[in-house]
Image (cartoon, rainbow, N blue to C red; front, top):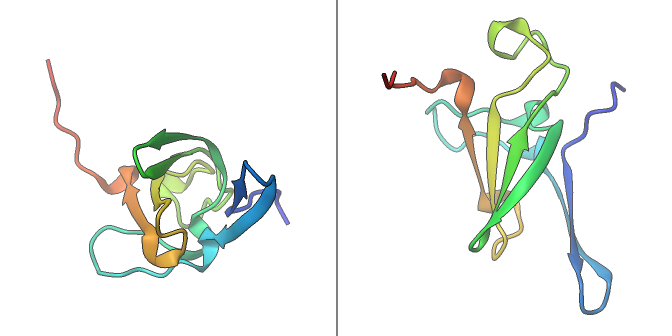
Length: 104
């Protein structure tokens, strides 16, 4: 493969054991709203914890044919509900298809 992956591993820090594994590439669209799914959800550069959520920062996923402007970079911001560490606890925001308001 190309080295990009979309798996999250949840670790119980008290017991130092694996508490769960979530494969983001198995996520399916829940609506026809600008949401991406499947193999596009991989290649993140980091993440931020925010309340009960983990927000993943997009980077490269190597899928030039499906990304905006046919580049190797992705614009998929993924929010994972840590209380629902499953595919149903995921929401995706595709920044590449989001309109931006110009601020002077």
